[in-house]
Length: 420
Image (cartoon, rainbow, N blue to C red; front, side, top):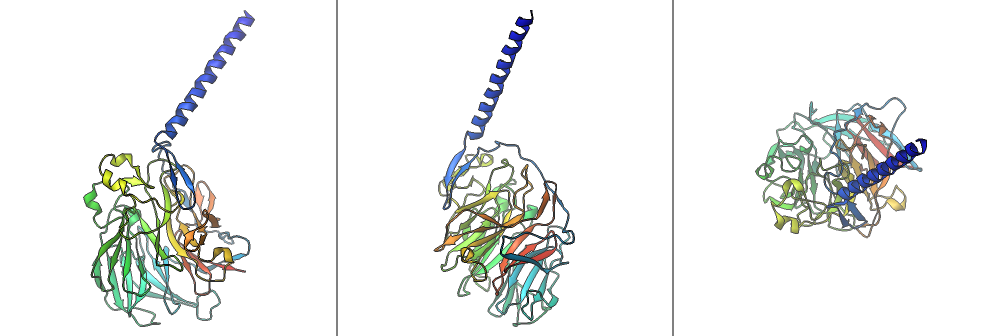
C-alpha cells in the first residue's frame, strides 16, 4: 500500500509539472503572438504583443528632496542646486543675452508664470530672481526672436514686445496662433523652437487623448508639430502622428529637427516605447493607428491601413512609459568629448507600468549627426523605492558655460550638472 501511494504521488507530481510547463508555454506563446521585431537606428527592438501584461496604474508618492539628498551624476561631474523653492519649474529657456527664463506651470494649481533668473557673476548660481511674466495659461515653450518674447500657452502662441535685458513684461500680449486646448491632462504643454535664420517657428502640440478615445475629430491640429511664420501666419503641419512631442532641438551640424515623444498607454508594461527621432518634413509617425512603425494598435484596428503603411519607424527607443519629455543636444565643450553633439533626454517617469521606469535623465551618443549608441543613464537618484520618488526631471537645457540644467517640477528645483 505504501509503495502504491508513493507511485500515485509521483504520477500526480509529473502531471502537475507537465501542466505548469504547458501553461508557461501557452503564456510565452501568447506573449509572442503578434509580437514584432523593429529595426531602429541604434538597435533591433523586440516588441511584445499588445496586452501581454496587464495594464496597471502605479503612481509613486512624490515626496520631495530631504536635506542633503540630490541626484547622482557619473564620476567626474558635480550636481548642485541652481534654483529652488520654485512652483513646478517645468521648462527653461536661455535667451541670447544669457538670461534664464523658467516656465512654472502644472496640470493643476498652476503658477502660470515665467520667472527670470540671472547669473550676473557667472559662478553657477543666479543672483537675480524676478517674476518676468504672469497671469498666463499653462505656459511652457519660450522664445526671443526679432524683438519679441514668445510664449506658448496651452491655448495659443502669444508674443510680447521685448527689449534685451528687461526684467519684467507688463504689456498685454498678442495671441498670434490659436491652439487646441483641453483633453488628456498630461498633454497640455506646447513647446517652441525657431529655425536657424528665424524665419519659421515650430510648435509641438500633443494629442487630446491616449489613443483617440473620443474620436479623431477631437484631435484636429493635435499630435503634430506645426510650423508658422514669426507673425503667426502661414501655419502648416510639419509632421504628424506624434502622440505627445514635447522636447525639440536641431541636431548639431545639420538642419535636422529632432523631438522627444511620449507614447501611448494601456497596452502593457513594455508597450509602447517612448522615443526620440529625427522629424521628416511631412512625415507620419503612427498615432493613433500604429505604434513604433507599422504595428497596428488593436484599439484602432482596420481604421486606416493607408496611414499605417506610411508610418515611419522612430530612430531611438528610450523605454516604455518613461514619459520622455525633455530633449537637448550638447553643443558645448565643458563635458568630456563622448558627450559632444549627443542628446540629453529628461524622463518624467511612469505611471502605467508595474515597476517604475524613467525618473532620470539619459544620454544618447551621436556621431556625424546620427545616433551612435543606446541610451545611457546620466542623472539618476530620483527614486527612493517603488512607492516613493524624490522628484521628476522634465526639461533639460545646456547653459552657455557648458553646464546642464535639469528642471525637476515635482521637487521644485532646477539642478545644475557641471564637469569637475
